[in-house]
Every structure is written in C-alpha cells, then in structure tokens.
Length: 280
Figure (spheres, rainbow, N blue to C red):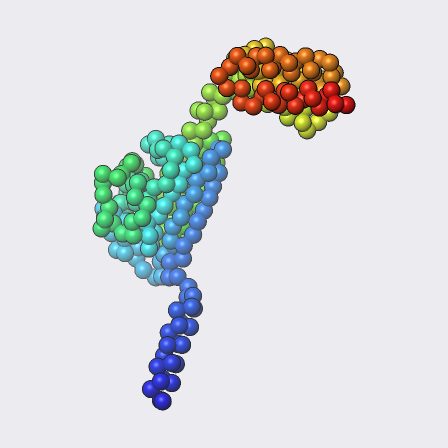
C-alpha cells in the first residue's frame, strides 16, 4: 500500500512539475519594424552578460555565432531589400555572425531551423557582409537587436551586447516599385481600371452619380471592348433615374457579350437589370 501511495505521489509530482513554466535563462524576443512601407521582423533569444567576458571569451573571435542563444536568430523581410549593401529577396533567413575585434562578418542563410553552427551549410548562404565594431560607453546587459536612424526607405539595425555594437544599414526596395508606379501614373495617367474601380466605388458607396458616370465613360473610352464596364454604366444610369438610357446600354452589353467566348455572367446580369427596370 505504501508503495502505491509513494508511486502515486511521484507520478503527481512529475505531472505537476511538467505543467510549471519557469523563466528562460535567455528569453526569446520578437521585434517588428516598418522601414519605408515594408515590415522587417527579427526573432531571437537574449542571453545576458552575467559578469562574464563576452567577445573573445564566451563568443570567440573569428568563430561563427548563432547571434543570440538557443535557436538561431531569424529575420524576415516582407519585401525585397538591401541588407548591408547586399540585395536580398523577401522571405525568412537565419542570421549568423563571425565576430572579430575590429570587424564582424554577418551572413544570412536560407535554413531557419538551425540551433547551432554544427549543421550550418554554406550552400544555403544568401549573402555575407562586413560591419565595423563600435565600442560603446553604454553597457548592454542582455543581447539586443533594435532599429533606429530612420529615413524614408532605410534604417539602421543594431546588434548590441556588453560594450560592443555593430550597425547594419537596411534599405527597402519598395521605393523602386513606388517610383515606377508614380512614373506610370504621372506620365500615362490613370488606367481604365482606375477609372472603372473609382466609378463603381462612388456609385455603390456615395450619391456622387454624376462623377461615377463621368469616370465610367472615361474607362469605356480607354477600354471600348470591356462590356463589363458598359454594364456598370447601365447600373449607374439606373441609379440616376435614366431608365431608358440604362436599358439601351444593357441591351448593348448583351449584344456585345454574345460575340465573346465567355460573357462572365454579364448577359444574365444585364437581362435581370432590364427586367427590374421594366417591372417598376
């Protein structure tokens, strides 16, 4: 009987102990920073100095380091970017460093599931950059990664621990895409779809039907073959009370759509619109 009680107590103790969460020696952290119009996220663990000599001792010089503790640091870019001068495609990467006395090597690797450097494969490396060591007066107890020195489309990502800091310039390539979009908009003007979508929005969400009609007419001028745009013109005319003209345009849609391989349901939608007008 005593054995049963003892075994039961040991089982309960083990079960309860398994449920108790204890603090991590190197707690995990996630930081997400918007740079320009893009998000950059970093997931890492934060070991403490704890009265130890860090660089050159705990973290050896000229040896690869997981850049934190536990699982290797992971950095995610939601847009293509320039990382310390190297172009990097959007996605997630593990971040490793090789600290030196005057300069660090910083590398990104496609494998984000590494827990140490033992399984590191150079074949998965996507870039390798250099960063100068900055000796700081401010002491950082827990390893820290943060962002600062923001400009329109770039920022500095800093790695700090003890009295050492390295800075890596990050630049979002979204600026190039925005530049392209602005040039197209300002040189070619709004597209047929821009006017079409604007006309639908104003017709369905405001009472600015005159403006919606003007925009849908412009869209049709730019895309005279787009019978679906004609259908929405018929809808706008109906909202404006121009039933006769609305029916006329809807009939044109039916005639035009019948000549196409696929009418995308606009023949029936036009027929239903005509019926709804005539039933009143």
